[in-house]
Image (cartoon, rainbow, N blue to C red; front, side):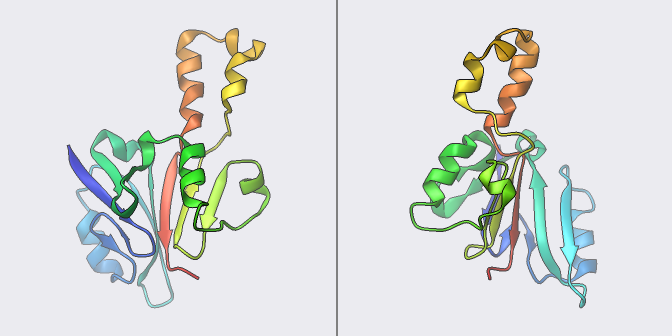
Length: 150
């Protein structure tokens, strides 16, 4: 499987921060994955985000950390990154949903913070195996983004 390299504060795959809008659109035109890209006033890439669907096509890696983003539990990613970095505290980070590391230029998001102990709760046990499997996807981040470090 091909790799999609995620470089905090710089790039996701071939899309780099600071690229021209026209160059970027040409580059991703036939991409099998969806990129959420934002541009600054000069039509240069200022934000790049990909969702976990990218793992169907690529091994999504942060090479400096040897971290496979969508195959590593969110709690493990946060623990790893907070050893040497600080995330921006806000309501979403306190809820375990979103972590923005402004000094690195990287952020992670998931819609729901499922905890290991939740799987022992009655509401979880009453779910069908298929629904439990779907719910357990919330152990992982759903998207990753890069931006210029602050």
